[in-house]
Image (cartoon, rainbow, N blue to C red; front, side, top):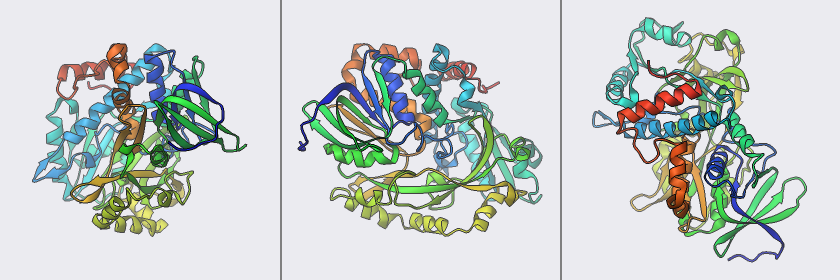
Length: 498
């Protein structure tokens, strides 16, 4: 146990660190399951959802593994759909959670955060045969009912005119289309979730509050806070702590000194977008169009031309262009990477550096790219694009997971991971995509890990009222899958399979 000044502290049931989509989702679950629970959220910035959950910072805008080719790798000539099915059905959990909140009146208008937008995979040349094999593998599963494939340029032009106009007529192209895709503004959703909680007894949210340290005190945690503007310090004692601070989670997890945190490190990857707000283009492109990632590039760098509904307006985003920064957060410090290194994670970091030379070279190449080179990449997806219609925008930071591995010494792991204390008193979320899109599923995982007693004493039944498919597999039950998707589509106002 660390030494600390003996100052008064108030006691609460739960402290959630970070006012993003993860903490907001967990807070809603907890208040639904136990209304008298006292919950406080602490955010170091002045507003909610200003980091990874902000719509301009994240690419996780309705990830359902409908068009993201990196979720369906090919091995020995066979398309692997396991990961795609996982993400696809995990997104269904989020849809059920949101539909419950809309139906109950906690969220008034689903159009304030979700819109129907078709998801399209688009490839050229040698990748056409891969896309056809991927289509055959996915469309044979009930979770991908309604997927369409085309290698007819005229039909593809009807789907995505801006992508096809001005293209060489001799280009060999193909696309798949899922009409049931969506665009989700996670910044808006986060604020809606928090607004639904703010009037409830026992809930409060505090901004400009930095968590400096976490000390174990018996079965509870002392959370040490400092106000970013006034410097005022305070302590809060909590029975449960959730660290949902995005890229800032790793530092706080290390401060907890729980044994389960040993060996974890982070590898930051930044990003840039090209953004277009010209109505002449935004009115003609209504899709998320994903291509194939460059060899050695991280999943977050898969090129895509997206329709985005943000703050009531429609924009197009292309990218993201990967970059490297030692910051773990967009509003972080350049010392973040260096201060995260300790004796437990140094060897895993070195092993990852040794085994990921191609990724390092890719990131260096992206950092050195000129504006002209970035625009040429856009023109592969929008041949008639004009520079005057586009501007560069900085995306958020992502911190990929580095962890110990007995074979390689350390591995770089894409995706998200929950790390929790053995007694369930603390949990932390590490990693990136498809994080936001599967927030409800991830938070249910946190509940099962950290509230086992409560789950067995009534929470399980209440959860099934919120998530009807809880404890069942939509991937294994075609009838349940069809029922859930039809019902959530109707409530959320998104497209269902005809």
